[in-house]
Image (tube, rainbow, N blue to C red; front, side):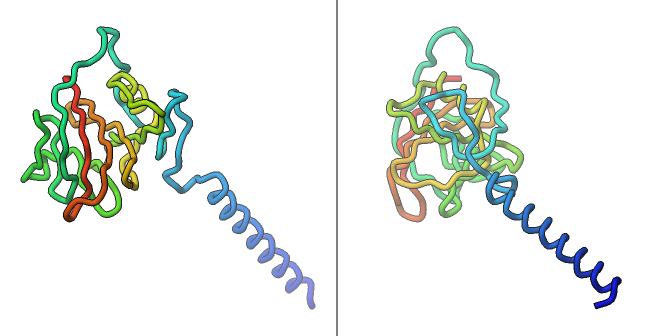
Length: 178
């Protein structure tokens, strides 16, 4: 093999090694994934990368429940800024919609969803803290999962997935006053 061919072979081998290291590091460190980030709340494990922009909860005391009940999450979208929450006919009013098998915040740049994994149900204040540190744009959902959610107008809600219902997923919802 000539010197030029040897140098070419070495250069190509080095490029291959660099590509393999980069590929392995993205899988190992999750650089290109929507992976969990550490939570400021020890009772919760978020699903997704940090990105929430909610202000810290006020110290005025616990928020009151504005509405509590069961809903179906489906492709019709859900508006949490109404009491009770409504399935919104126009997508401009959607806060969330169900796209099998994910719950997705409607506005592409919004990250208003965080999975709660604590043993006890969270308060509105717990949800506010979790959303401020670990919210995501979309999350795979399954029966029994519990999510804190934030509406376009910054209203907080708790969604407990109850399982398949029609073309969507059932959810028990707690909606707190603004």
